[in-house]
Image (cartoon, rainbow, N blue to C red):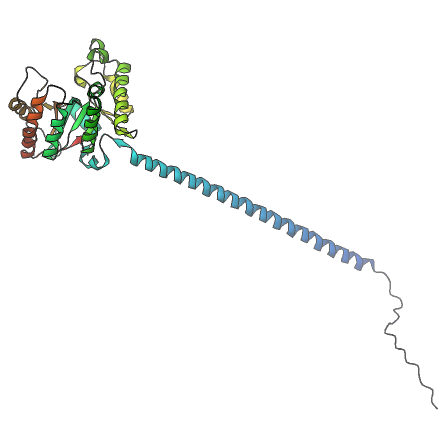
Length: 318
């Protein structure tokens, strides 16, 4: 019987002569280090990228916030501008002229207006509790408006009635301008020379009274010097002050002569208004609504009708 060979079920083979390979081990270590280095570098780059993105996001948020704050400031300024009232109420602005431009024309004796006739009815020294209501009634009946150069002292003398007349005048579309507080020539123009400190402080008193009556947002950039700008010496300081503050001093180029010479009746006042405005496209007519000027109130409807019939548009100064 043949002898069976012995089967070896072991899967392991004996590797004779297999030794440690330093070169291969070095390559393996280098590869490992490269992988580790690259991993660290990638992590570092990722961290840096995320940090940069975070800073960029913060910068964008800060810029957006600054833009929001600027827009909000601009919006508030626009809202404040809407609230500000300069001389006339907002609805009446369409009938007002730039007083600075009119002042320049008066100083240059330029009474032209590009072929269009325009008249500015102006009243000084109010408000009075006796004449001003009649003047307002005549203006309203005629459907026209005027510019009132008011004095603070007369407003105070008239008490609540005078204050209510200022409110009525303003609400009906008339312009409110400043004619000083005291109307005191000796205080304003000692020795016929302007005292700028006295002058500005006197006018500021009336400004404060008007703000108290018409609200803190009211102001006027239009003044009339008591006695007229043309009557006094040393007015250069006032001119500079007005120019720096975008204000205007308004005199006149026509008048009804209700404060000149002897007392006149309504017909005579009308005749003077016609005579002094003749041939002028732009008329700034001086009248008064203070105490004792009842004949001016009586003549006013006829004066209004005369300018209407002569083709004039009625405007205010603001």
